[in-house]
Length: 151
Image (cartoon, rainbow, N blue to C red; front, side):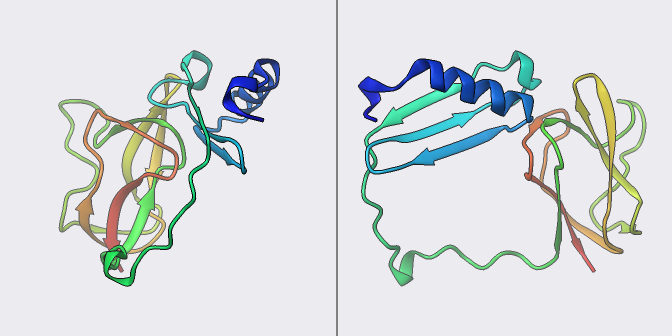
């Protein structure tokens, strides 16, 4: 189906399904359509989805010289949800974790506020925090890296 023939009723049904399942990003591509939806930064029920429909372009294979650099060493603790990242329990409280701090598996690293609920995010490994990848008070997406911990 071309962009000018996009079935809006089917799109609305798809959006309702994605929102009910708390999906923050969705991409569909075929020979005629390239569709990307992103719902983020606010609770899914209040989000305004961004819809982009365009003819699909052929994808060229990357040349060996343009390949991405190797990932940094260490275990990445990622966000399990969409929400707002906080390094401490309150603005005047010390951060749960700092760079160079030793952490144990199960130790709270941060809080993610989602739909007025504060969710403690715990380390899933023992190690040392080598990098904090999210900014305090800023929105984070599902799967976004938050911390890098060297085991």
